[in-house]
Amino acid sequence: MPLVPVCDSKDAVVARAAERLTARIDAAIAARDAAFVRLTGGDTAARRLYEALGDDRRPWRTQIDWRRLHRC
Image (spheres, rainbow, N blue to C red):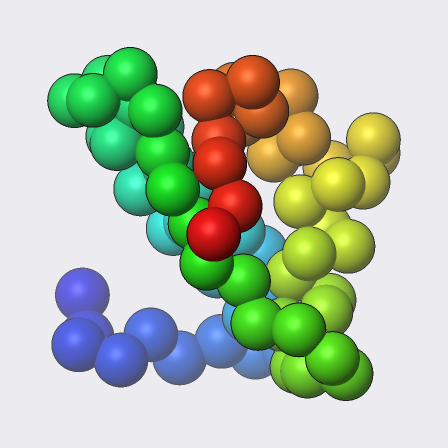
């Protein structure tokens, strides 16, 4: 796997980022029973990621244990 993933589209970048973030959240919860995430605000490129994570039609919404996720 390359050090910097190469994606074919913006949607693929969002999916890759959501998969990686979800995996890190799951690992933190498994290790510490909680995960802490700091999110950027305003009108950022990450907005698409946030929308994907909260979208009922995407898998990440149900994969994340939101009760154990704390935003800083």
